[in-house]
Length: 274
Length: 304
Image (cartoon, rainbow over all chains, first blue to last red; front, side, top):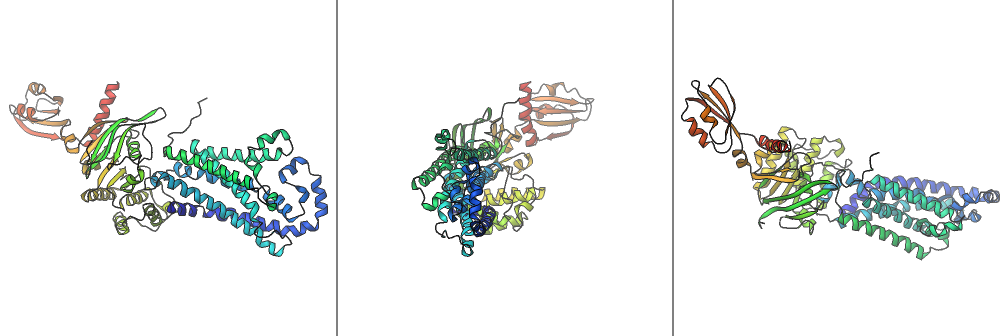
């Protein structure tokens, strides 16, 4: 399993550096802008208050925009599940199936590696890669605080990132599960991406329309804490998200244990001819 | 079922949707033999091999590999097996050496690395370049090295010489023969009849998911149809030859030569020819390829 883990993590190196550095640089930019924004906070507050509620519903509590926590949440954390969700969906959907589709899994599985070890090794590599991206991202947020008046604290900055990690694991494992049932990686990634975007909009729109609240309760992003995380993580929500990820991963593992390893189009779905 | 069998499949069936890839394959390969598995594309060769390694699950039937049920303990089967897939795909960003180290890692570093280098040298394979820079033939060599480097008890090779030049094809056949000499069982599928004929002790012919023939390679060739070209010192009436059991006249000239097709033993024909003024007698042994094709021609005739 460790060979699988190390090999998979090595393949993720480029993504860890690419996503991590890009988001860290974005974090540096946001933190560096805080002092300038804070100086103009009265005018900005007035501007934000005239924003239509449809927009502010997706941005969190804009009344706290001038506070360090409110600012970093609005500018960074509020849409990060959508951005990094793309990584989670693409990685989760391709974790096993991309190698299967290009024929590499056949030879790997012909070695004395159990399906459980392969599955677990790759899943752990995905978790490690996600944590690594968030760690680089965290560095981009906390290091510039040394020359900024933003005083959130290095440890507290991890709180929304932990909530974000749980979200990414949910969408990553959900996409992995989809890839085990759907006939292609592309279809799994598309479906996972659609669920991610739908979750983002339903969660935002439920703040405007009470009728959507029952549906929003099924949305993983309903339990994402950006600014609220700085006041303390909701343990039940975090456990619920991590529990969902474990259930999705367990179902995917169950399916992977039982299905054929494909090398061609066998087992694929065909749309009826028009 | 023999306890000594390296491979055993009984009534093995596998379908992909409506396509019935295997329709009750029965197969037994003894330990220490080289066994050729013949059939055209889509006949079920690769599906059989993938069932043996638990890469796919059969719909019905029984499989044992080295006495082990692959579905019950696939890791034990794979630990003692070397596999070369028909469609080899490798990580293009790894070097040849890293690729082999990775596969060795998956085997718990059980490979004999000196032996791996030796095979690579014999196949003229450079270990330094990345896989993406290799030709199809050189990638195939990487596949051969990884299949052999841990000296497995059983080799499952799906088209092992695919994409190799004749010199390298010959070297691979030597490696297969050497593996057998060291006690390994070799089960390999191929389109190239000459190579199967050269190394396989027994062959199975699979057609549309059914084994239609299992036989020793030599006996399969010997008992098949063969041609006899007879020349006479003077024009003769060949009528009596046409009446010999198992003999068919394919063509004749002006009575001084005749081309015959003989099914089974030559004894009756030779005895019949004793009454003729024979000046020359030649027989053509059919190649394994002709025998193989005959199974398909027979099938087409039946369908017509």
